[in-house]
Amino acid sequence: MTDREAVIRVTEAGFYCPAGDFYVDPWRKVARAVITHAHSDHARPGCGAYLCPVEGRAVLAARVGGGAVIDTLPYGERKRIGDAVVSLHPAGHILGSAQVRVETAAGVWVVSGDYNNSTSTPACAAFEPVRCDVFITESTFGLPLYRWPRPEVVFAEIHRWWAANREEGLTSVLPAYPLGKSQRLLAGLDGEVGPIAVHGNVKTFLPLYEAAGIRLAPTVLLTEKTAPEIRGKGLVIMSSAAREAGILRKLGPVSHGFASGWMQTRAARRSRDGDRGFVMSDHADWPGLLAAVEATGARRIGVTHGELESFTRYLSERGYDAFAAPTRFTGEGSDGGE
Ligand SMILES: [Zn+2]
Ligand SMILES: [Zn+2]
Image 1 (cartoon, rainbow, N blue to C red):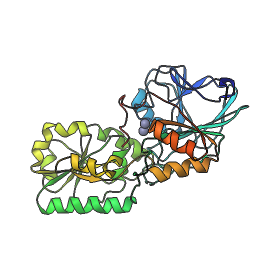
Image 2 (cartoon, rainbow, N blue to C red; image 1 turned 180 degrees about the horizontal axis):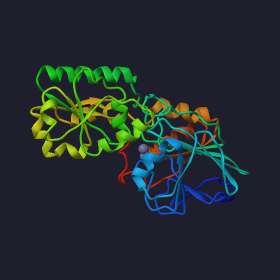
Image 3 (cartoon, helix red, strand yellow; image 1 turned 135 degrees about the vertical axis):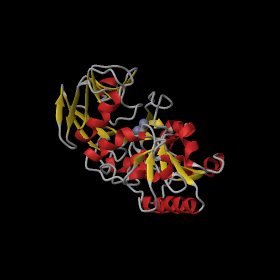
Image 4 (cartoon, rainbow, N blue to C red; image 1 turned 90 degrees about the vertical axis):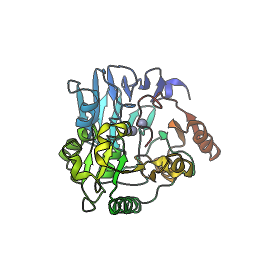
């Protein structure tokens, strides 16, 4: 395929659509950016104008600054930009996350962004497959060992761990990425087991989810004042970085858990001394990635954001015209593929 036939090109600044003169998830400041979701590795401040789903507007504004020009589009609605037609489709990753469908005279391409079609959550709209000629897919968990258990099984494990901790007078602490994982947890946690507290920037995004009509378990903000009501019986959700915070000392003896796709491997479970690992992700697992690729009907697949080489090779062996589409997402303040 020559560059002239490409609906989307991988450039220095990110995925670029020449026909519409816009970028998808640019990592540089560009005039026009279409954003798959508000994680910092996909949504950078300083662009001239942004386009995202209606549901993603508030979280994107929180990420790139309230003064930014943000246009929105309802899921599934088409918008002409130059010689391209753009529409956004639910990705099942976080609130307002989207796959970006771009149609030009040269065909239909879809940039998936991060997505989860393996396990659904009440915290965001469910992934919808989109037919296309070329599908650019993420591959964070693009190895066959990653297979997520059903969310109700994982929540039952978390509730049992929390209740057992409570029996022993331990406070349960669950680190989670403040945007996405925290709300996926809060949408499934049972406040009857005990009080739930959030710490630091986890709190920032909760009103935005609630404003979008998403029901989350009731929480209190963890402070010196509220710590005594959490101590020995509650569950605290905080970012990993905040785990070192002095406030933890107010909670008495603590049991640490960790909810992530990376917890699938025994090695990851073992490496965190005394921690309890729960397998829960905002991303697709291996069967999910394969199902997503298949459902597009595309024969040409771009692989980005994760296991580029091995997943590209796997798809090529299966007869796909697969290519690696490297981005600068990984390791630059990303969501860590949780
Ligand atoms: Zn993400
Ligand atoms: Zn990402």
